[in-house]
Image (cartoon, rainbow, N blue to C red):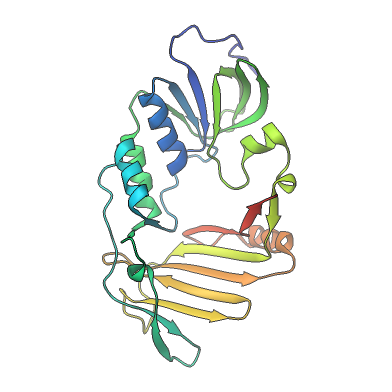
Length: 267
């Protein structure tokens, strides 16, 4: 079923902005736009907030930006224990971890920042789940966007002065505005999976980090002072598309942030 919400320019003095994606970037963008006098609307294709994910290392500039946006309650989970290079024989030697980097980065979970960004979002900002853009028509005054509500199986057409794509590496907004992913991404030949562990690994103290690095693959354990560690697993492949298809066929690992290839923008 298709309906139209009209495509005329809003008469309100406050301009409308569509923010696609309700992750950290989307929530923060909407909060900043609201503070600047805009009326943002957030759409998210998932049925609810995505609370889990990987870790974030926040340096000084990031903490200043978070404070300016109004993100509160973010705390440093950095451990004071060490990080070790390990091998399959169980040998280990000291290695560099995030706690050794200059600049004193804060370690935290993605969920910590997402929660702070959600709490900073003004109550008047509209947040629509199960919704994603399917059409985008730009002109000199803004954009007409077709939004699909998968829960109610309904499409609406709305007018916005600004569209912000905060919907990830394979952005739907970028596809609609400029073309397919293949025009802008170049696979680097690696697959990456990042996730939270429910508890520390056997034989590894909960606040110790570990690195197992071999030709073409690596396994990193990142510890926290007050939370089970997170893991980053990567391996090299000649066929990223086939690996992604296989991962989708078997399902994403529980608690994983992603299982995808690290790509870079085309140049």
